[in-house]
Length: 433
Image (cartoon, rainbow, N blue to C red; front, side, top):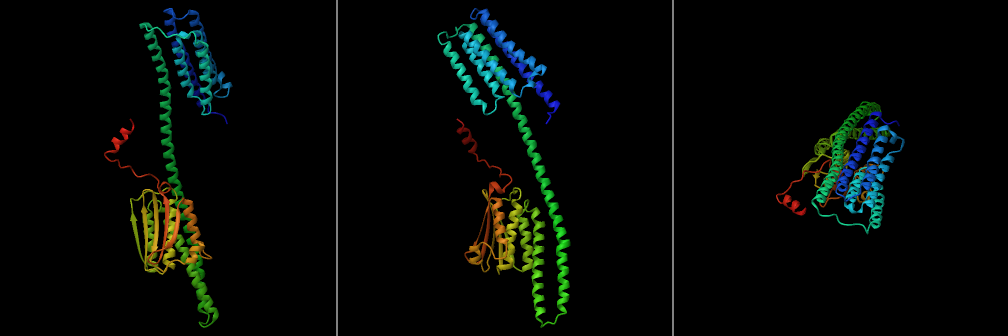
C-alpha cells in the first residue's frame, strides 16, 4: 500500500525540524562549555572535540534528513542512530571533562526524555538498562577525577544558564506531548460523534427493515392464511352438522384461528419493539393494554426509578421477553389481574410480570419448557445474550412471576449525573495531600 505523498512530505518536514532542534541544542551546550573554557576550567581542545562531535553529528543527520536519505531505512532506524549517537557524545564529554560531570549527566537525562517520545513500549526497559549501565561505567572510570564545581559567581551563572537551556528543551518536549494529547482528545470526540451517528443510522435501518418485513408478512402470509380459513369455513358449512368430518374441520379451523392470532401478535411485537429502546415503559404499557382488551383481563404497569436510555438491543430484547411473558399470562394463567413492574435501579434493570392465576406447573418449571413450544427457552436465550438473568417462579399468594434482571453497566447507555454533596469537595481535596 503506497503512502500518501502529502502525508510523507509533512512527516519529513517534522523530522527535519526535530533534527535541526538537536543541532541548536548541541550548539547551545557547546556555547555553555565555551564559557568554562574561557574561564580556564576546560581545555580548549576538549571543547573543540565536543563541538565537532556534537554539532557535526547532529548537523550530518540533519543533512541526511534534508536529502531524504533516512527514507532508505525502515522507520525509526535513523532515529535510533541519532539517539545512540547523542548519548555517546555526552558520555564521551563526561569522560573527557569529569569536572563538568553535572552538565553532561543533565544533558543525558534530557536526551533520554526526548528519546522516550519515539520508543515503543517494549524498548523502554532496554533503553533504560543500556543508558544506566553506560553512565555507571563512565562514572566508575572517572571516579578518581570527579570534583565539585567551585561555588563562584561565574560557575553559578553558567550552571543556571545551562539548566535554563535544559528546561527549554524539556518544555519543547512537553509542548509536543500536550499538542498530541489535544489532537487525540479531539479525534476521540470526533470518533465518538461518528459512532453515535452510525448507531442512529443503524437503528433507523433496523426500523425500516422491520416495518418492511411486518408489512410483507401481513400482506402475504397472514392474509393468505385468512383467505384459506374462509374457504375452509365455506366448505365446512356444506358438511352435515352431525358428520365426523364436520367436527374435524371445526377443530382444524379453531387451530388455524389460533395460528392467525399468534401471527398477528408476533407482528405487533415486531412493530412495537422498534421503539422499546427509547421508551420500554411505553412499549410495555401499549402491549399490556392491547392484550387486556383482547382477553378481558385487568392489566396494570408500575414504574420505579428514573427512566434511563437503554444500551443497544437491551430495550428490544427486554421488551420481547416481557411481552412473551405477558402473552403467556393472558392466554394460559386464568388470571383476573396481571401486573408488569419496570424498575430502573442504579445498578440493575428489572422487568417483572406477575399474575394471580393458577400458577405454572412444577413439571414445566423443572423441564424448563413446554413440550412442542419454544417460548420459555427463547426467553432464557435472549436473557443470556443480554448478560442478564431470567427467573420464573410461583407467587406467594398463587400465580406466576417472571423476572428479568440486567446489570446496569450493560443495560444503560450513560450513567446518571453525579450529585455531589457539600462535603465531597472537601473530602476530595483533603485526600490529595
